[in-house]
Image (tube, rainbow, N blue to C red; front, side):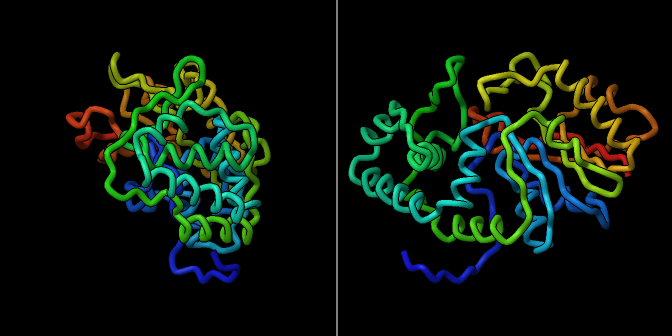
Length: 285
């Protein structure tokens, strides 16, 4: 791993995350404000829109956050201590290709204490677990089985170096906190993108275990309240969510325009449910 590294591509999400927006960027891009000041994204996840905006604007100033502390630790570690992380990921890769099954489950059972090993474990599991599905049980324990991959790119050196350089060259503040705290500094002309865990469209579609917690109807109501307060301040607000009666009702005032877009969700654990469906983009500008 040389010290000099020439970037050949823009950064892209380094984790596969439920609800990730990478495939929807072309549709979301059509609805972005033409101009804006600072960028705010409180439900960061895989960061597809953040990386897209960074690729478009090298001087982007932003405030991003997520309640998943392991995920935020990953962003911070990639930004601040990439060389040690790459070495750790290389060890995982070497061991995985020696005996993938036994090594995967030994790592899944492990509980590393150091920052590097925690992040390295998360990225390793994300690249090798079933369907790249991040899920924890009620005790906060990662419980996804081994996936079927012939040659997973565990180290991701090129992309991680690209992410590292973009996060270091831009004024991006990264925190683990509630969405309402993240957008407190948003002012007129800024841009806020909300991409919360979606409201379930059916009784069986209530998968919300990204943070060992739920984002329920009361949270959605609180999000709508914060969104309306931001809109009154002249902040550009864009939201993504599922196409449900509850979501539509909460954003039914004249301040909001609702667009239905088609999405494919390839991360569903049931391959029969990985078909296209509609979801909503809601904005006030």
